Amino acid sequence: MRLNTINPWILAIRPRTLPAAIGPLLIGNILALQLEAFSWLIAVTSMFCALLLQVAVNLANDYFDFKSGIDTEERLGPTRVTQSGLIAPNTVRNAMAFCLILALLVGSYLIYHGGIPIAILAALAIFGALGYSGGPYPLASHGLGEVAAFIFFGLIAVVGSYYLQAGTTSTSAWLMGSAIGLFNAAIMLVNNTRDISTDIKAGKNTLAVRIGEAQARILYQALVYLPFGIIIAGFLLGLLPGLPVLLSGLSLLIARKLSQQFSQESGAALNPLLGATAKLTMIFSALFSVGLVISL
Image (cartoon, rainbow, N blue to C red; front, top):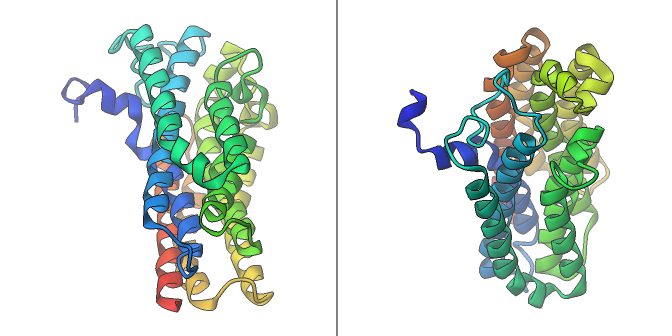
């Protein structure tokens, strides 16, 4: 599909990254499905809020990377609407602010329901959205992008959504939050490994820049394989039921294929792997959730 046939806002939103937001919220809510206090309204609202935050992060990344000079004509990744001139910088910034405000408005119901802990998580989420690429200490430019993905789109997303339903946390939620967080960190690693050469020129010290491409390949394997070790350990310890572990374990075949591809590709050739890793996150989450529902 040619660039001029795609709505620039679709490019800005980056739909391929949205599974990173949907997957953890799906698991967090399904883990609480059997609880008497479970609310579908809370589940849908939390997922919608997560999607708004993911879109805000994407817009913020687009805007701040342009303003800081990180995005140039040498960029290897998918088109950035600000750098390419498809959408004016101020318009992208305003859209980012709108998504954050809308997420806060939608999330106010979740804060009302969940109290101070959810208010704290909401504040952290907004800080993370803005601080990933912007602010005085951009997380992405200091090798903390993968850590941020693990925390915000893993632990906070799964454990936080479970807490909204249950009013407490559980070991299973922490285990699954860790598993999903590793997958989402892998998405970030693909993005940063692809951009090593341009990030070095721009002075953006991502984790991939710091450890180099060879070590990034090894780290990617760890990030996509460890989640399966976590769920198997959870099953052996009696913390996770067998059917969800078995079904989600089928996605190991996809993880193996992606790991092989990542070890062979570099630069712009990694672009397809970015969306494929996000799909792995969603497939793993969906299979685990289906297994949980069947097990009830």
